[in-house]
Each structure stands twice: as structure tokens, then as C-alpha cells.
Image 1: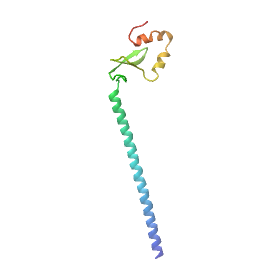
Image 2 (image 1 turned 90 degrees about the vertical axis):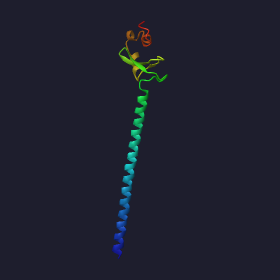
Image 3 (image 1 turned 90 degrees about the horizontal axis):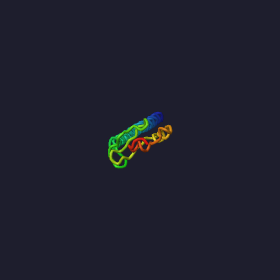
Image 4 (image 1 turned 180 degrees about the vertical axis):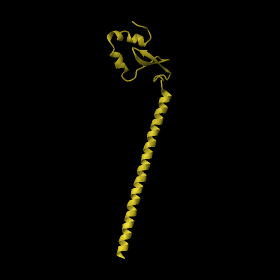
Length: 114
């Protein structure tokens, strides 16, 4: 009789441990799915924002036009003529030789060379 009780206790213990392991695995998979869905939702929102604002002036919202300035593409608003430089472009412009920098502002503003 003692053997049977011990066997039953071990079986119950194994069942409890196995159920706990299965529940942990189910929880882990669910949390992983939730994290992945949040990541996808963030990416979708980022793409929607990009599509809605791509090449739009951050000041007035009108379309930006790309112009070449000394081999660097800058964006200029078609309405307010605001100028947008991507990361590093301002530094690239100022690193040009002195002769290339001369009249830079006039060229940006479309006033021709000085």
C-alpha cells in the first residue's frame, strides 16, 4: 500500500511539474507573439508616417524638390523655399574647397554664382 501511495505521489508531482513546464512554454510563446506583433505594428506605423510625410516640407507641408548643390542633393520646399539637409550634408558642403564654397548661399537661394 505504501508503494502505491508513493507511486501516486510521484505521478502527481510529475504531472504538476509537467503542467507547469507546459504553461511556462505556452506563456513564453504568447509573449513572443505579442512582442513580434508590437514590433510589426511599430514598423507599420513608421512606414505610414514615412509615406504621409515623404518629401513634404516640415514647416509648411508642401512638396520638397531635390536640387544638386556641389554634388550634394538638398531638398527645397516648392512653396516656402525652406531648405532641408540630410545628416552630414551641411558638413559635406562646408568641407568643400574654398573656391567651391564661394557663393554657396547664393546658389542655394537660386541667385546664381557670386
